[in-house]
Image (cartoon, rainbow, N blue to C red):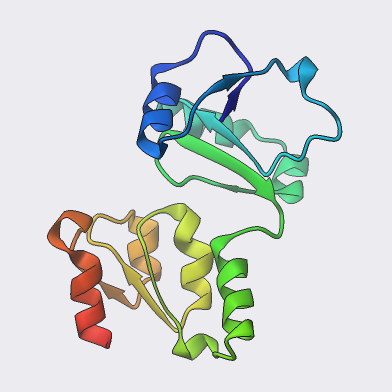
Length: 154
């Protein structure tokens, strides 16, 4: 994970530890034009992320897939990259229809995947957006929600 400032926020440090990903300092000016950047993440307190989201220009919203996976981050990805597009591609390769696919999710970055799958399961600790889109709500992560959901459908 590259950071553009020497002063690193506590949220960035926590995310680095959670993901077990080392941090590297690289000023924006030193990022080579040829460097492939798969994702840009902004990490800040949830209220600040909401403020940033409200101020994003439409041009940026149209050019990138912008999503939150946790309340304290905002991710910018290639327009055609999402869990939904990945699941659709995998399903096609495995010759499965969407109706034959079950997925589980808990955050906004799971919405595209849940829109694709014939059976969309929200974890008990999922956001309201995810629960509203789901065909079934299971138990929380801490209550073995994945196992419970699989027992219901398999």
